[in-house]
Length: 590
Image 1 (cartoon, rainbow, N blue to C red):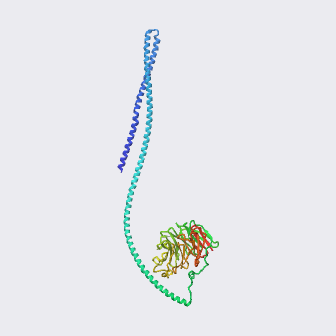
Image 2 (cartoon, rainbow, N blue to C red):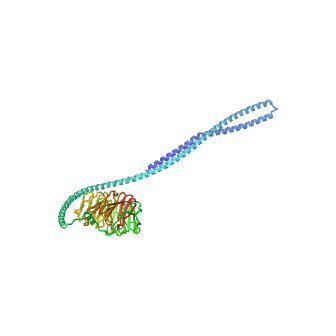
Image 3 (tube, helix red, strand yellow):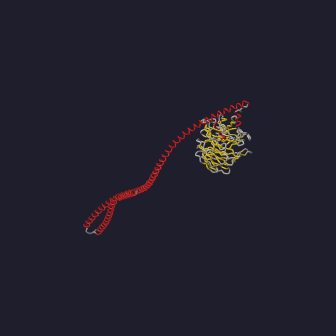
């Protein structure tokens, strides 16, 4: 590389030297002849001037001699005088003739000199022009040389980059070969695992068939025992003439006694809260009824203080820290903490004293749709679209357990004892017993007409699991709400219906629907009234629907301009709140 650069520099120097020699030769050679001729002419002019001066002087002397001769020889020797005068006149004529010739030569020389001066002037002008051209060409040559040096530097840089690229490419090729080897080994392992999975699946199917046969035989035995018991009860009933209560009375017996004032049926808007900057997707009253929280797509949770004396809501806190939409909110039992689920793959807990989160529950790989406190308030359950549920220990600040549901979770609630209930995208409601090591303890398969039970089930829910009826819901589950007696479950689904499920019988006891009622989103929330006399949900056209639990008779009221997404009753039942996708929360009264 260095030898090539040296040869290149020598070649440039030689070209520059040749150009300069040619310019010098051309500038001098074109002026040699004019300068020589000019010198000769100048010499001739000078000699002619000297000759003219000499002839003038000689002429003056002759004229003086003639005058003297005329003065001295007037009287003497007239003939000699005439002869001398004639000779003098001839001599003067000759001298005048020579003077004329010399004058003509001088004029011709002067004219030729002027021509040569004009020619020299033109040549000097051409010389200056050529000098200017030489300067311009020198400047251009200098610019070309600078550009050449820059291009050479760029060339060196590109060569260095090329070397680095070749080295990095070689390293990447080596890594690619290593990854290919690892991939090949992993592919072999994957094939082995596939074979093992197929083997396990065939074994599982075989065991399931055996288990189903066993369950069928046990059911037949139990049906026989029930028939015998029924016959004996019929015989006893015939004797005592007692009759069973009608179905409506059975549903009334399933509802608890009202311990407080009856809940209102929302009919009149009390006030409107429009503090959110975007749609409202979650709201909740605190257990003591003194506070109210709402959250939505503006990524904040608004906490209000309820003033019953003036029947107004006072904004107390704006809880920040979420990076996406708030999907659910809940107070703890002491009404001192707020739990919110967010679409930024996390759930957060705030206290009333801080506007920043106290706990950040991160670990899901998709948006978190629901989060609930468990009874001891030291644990939280979250449900996500990553098809898992997670149990969080707030004291240890860790995820205690991950439950794999196999479908996106839209809502999760706390059941009785150690049981939690989740609603999913695949139209199923799943029951989980946290005391057991395996996951699904009891699954209601919605729309598939299949019910699966494990060997160990929660006794509070599953005393009659072997006699469970098939449940057929035609839409994705959007929300769940559990009645305070923990035996009635309200389910909202995308088939535009609400269903009331008796968990003691695993049966649907009532279905709520109405003309114009449409569930608009997968996170639409329905709720029970505190006394269980009403259920409520919002429709896609902004209409609020309220059904009587016993009769299923609907009532509707339209005050919202867009889809109603969420609603909730005050714990004492004297106030009702609903939120829509138009940034509005309406509080209702009787």
